[in-house]
Image (cartoon, rainbow over all chains, first blue to last red; front, side, top):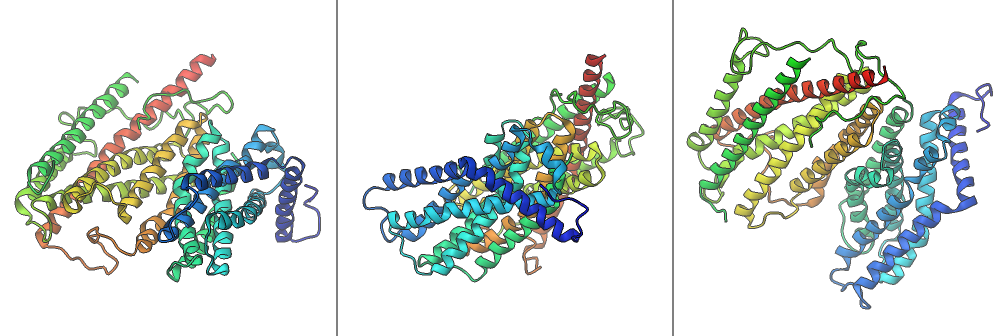
Length: 235
Length: 38
Length: 272
């Protein structure tokens, strides 16, 4: 947090530097302990194993693959996100670094930094999990571009909404239990859109508007987050 | 259990409005008692 | 769903000035009421008895109209279409309640008046009750028409998510002790609800591609496709439910205000 007000940069570039500083700080702390990454990844792999074993050696019959497998993939990702992402703010409150952070960074820049951190964390997990999922579940990929778009836009949306809701949950009692309760109804439209797009990637059909709506969800939640986060963060 | 008859519609309607009405009476009495105490 | 027990808020950390203007224990706004809802007073004021009896008469007329005046809708099994005159107004009023809660939350974040927060909370509580009743009557009607209580029709999905969302809102309210933080965070959550609502009401029904649910009265085409008598009764019932909602809402709001004042007074006397 070495960015000071009396540097000659404009306000916009100062904001960007602050966001980057938050992002860099979180990743530095993460690489020291790798706690969040391990939590997310182990949660995802455990759920994947559970699902895969429960489905049996033959997996899902090919006629039902399209209906079932994309939904399961996103349920796994949702679980992993709910297990790992709320830490972003709970950790700051627990180690009492939140006050220092309040003084050091502009709230919206802090939010942006945390979102980019959470999104990169989630994308890293997707990068490791999805190939595994595709292999284990025998998922036939028809359109790699659609799959990547779904993972990217879906992961980003998960990160944006989770960051905002984690900031709210971190200030209440029963933080860990509260987060999924708060997040589920907000994330559901995103998940349904992401599942629909993933379905298109593995050979199903999806309307033209699915990707547009997915991006629109990310954009509206990003704008809402930038506007609402300062109210959550500052008393 | 329920079918095309008018009975269940009337019964459901009766239950809902009786419930709402009793709730309103109770709430009104409670608020007035509390405000009298102040 | 009951928020009326005066829980132990008014934490020592940031004591709101008791009796101060706009504070959590504000004494200024409560006026003692003359007479009950059915007696006393001049009768014609906003808290008088006249409009209350008028409302009951109006609702009684709507109920009679639903059973004796309105014709049966086409393609409905037996008398089941009469549930429409209660199901639709309750769903409509719960929507009004949730939008009003969002508006009061925005107002709170803007002006920071505790009373707006209480109004939002009261609206959410009542909206939940009405949404629950709408869901139940809808499921009963679905049992008659579709032979299944539940089939994830887009509208059923939307209302379930609304129930979960505002249930989470109340859980969040219960999880924060400091009244200022509780009001601020809950208001933000309610505004997030307003942001997500278009996805629930427009995008998800669009994704579902087909629905068995009858068209909403105010459909995208802007046309009213309904028998005139049915429409009259439906509008009458909707207005009745809406006025009823605001009446109960006013009472709940006063109850929450009293609970807040008691908590602040109790905290004040404990400190001295």
